[in-house]
Image (tube, rainbow over all chains, first blue to last red; front, side, top):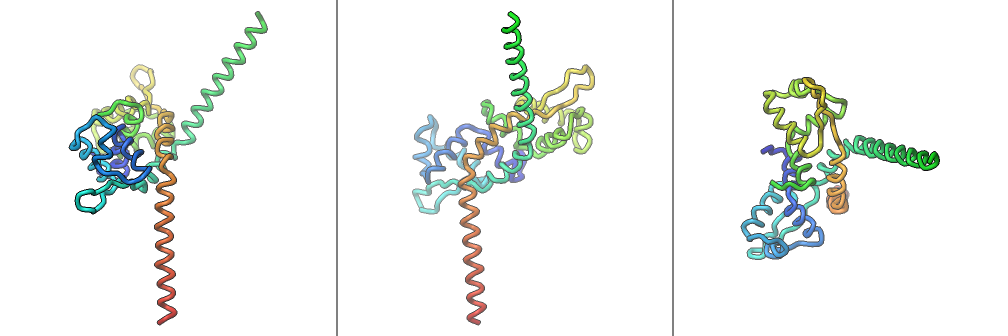
Length: 116
Length: 116
């Protein structure tokens, strides 16, 4: 597995449970127990996901001895967002082409209706 | 490995070689040989990366029998970008806090200079 920052970020995001954890942390810090609740998962399974997120710098664990709440750290998402943004014009062009094609189809349909 | 679209996209992006391949395809279609050139990699290694990108819908291969050029398909990147964008306010807040802290430090420094 690649170890550069951007790869660690994207890799951490490549799992629906980890994305759901980040989404829950967006509304405030949570303990591991609280994070595990909505998932049908054991604490060790959740802890494994938390470690991946932590390694990517997307969460941090508090230092309060037993409680150790998790907190969102969104900074690495900026670089990920900037990287993807380079491709915006390509997906916009492609959706524009699709729009154009659908409008053509619609225009053809109306012409056919009139000719009928 | 998770199989939902967003996980496949992020997983495909979690490798510097695959990101470099997408970046080269942004300037136009390329054969596998052309894509392999700048990397110190065998054709099978590149083919493996291409399969990951293809499975994520980020590239498509042409159908011209031998040549089969690769082409960028940027559409899945829109959903990835939209997902990350939800967190924009969190990283902006965090960079703002850092800015504020640095300005405070600077102000403290100036005050110290005057008192000297």
